[in-house]
Image (cartoon, rainbow, N blue to C red; front, side, top):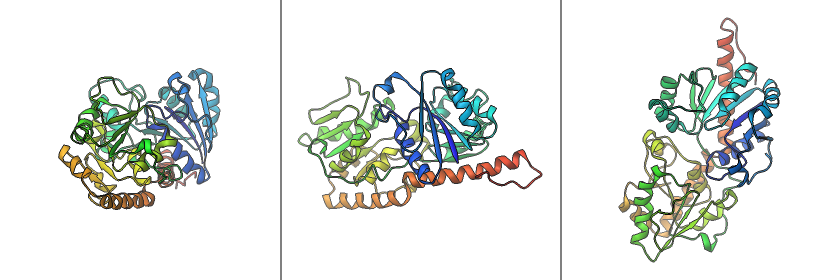
Length: 371
């Protein structure tokens, strides 16, 4: 297949989770023999923090304005088998119109922020990356979260077919490495600041740090405000590049996963960071959300914290207990949650949607996949 993608960013991992996901997915697709072209608007804040300048497993097209790249996108789409537009793509509407006008490629929307999309739609707020008519013109709608969000995408936004395509990890980039002293901590947390995570972060990270003043706690991530409730034993790293994630997770005794509030309410929302930490052999303490047991077995492959006491109990676990949890989580991750698993799943979803699309277009003839 030739797959054309219009996304937020793959070139910069600063302040977003899209880039790392696409890097792994493109790698997995390339390993399966598919050709990838990724169109990304060259935003100044991503240009200043760019940690990928080319797409090793395809073509990266950076552009300043849609009109500058429209003809190139038009040509790419007429040669494509599938075209994917993502949530928060700044040129989503223009790209969607171009895809539908081209006709040939399978039209796919991939929502990497489904709970946010649904909340805005229900509140009557504008969603710049969703067509005013909803998602009914796409052959397939993919969602970063599963569960009830899939039915909601169909009922509220008119998606014909909705399927989950969860986050994943690239095992070549995320694996156990030698620990580094400056990343060592009793409890670590890697994540961009978000107001709707703050209450949980205070319960599960800040308060345990206050109660363990002689232990070292470590936060890494962008956009943290100056009034964050720092304590003397909480250390901070601004923007940890992906190349350092393995060392970060390999060096901590226990790492925390905290989910955005909208995602946690709807459930079935594993983050890429969750899989990265597990692949690096870190013992994980996570907040709870519906569906988490479909990804890891609680108390065996992952520890769950609902309140400060749960977090303190996890911190009091023996080194042997935490090593066993980490080992089992890594095994589960490599068996089920790598970029190669997700790339294969995406291909299967595209093929299935292609058959359905052809049957819809030619209901009286027997359809066959273009792939």
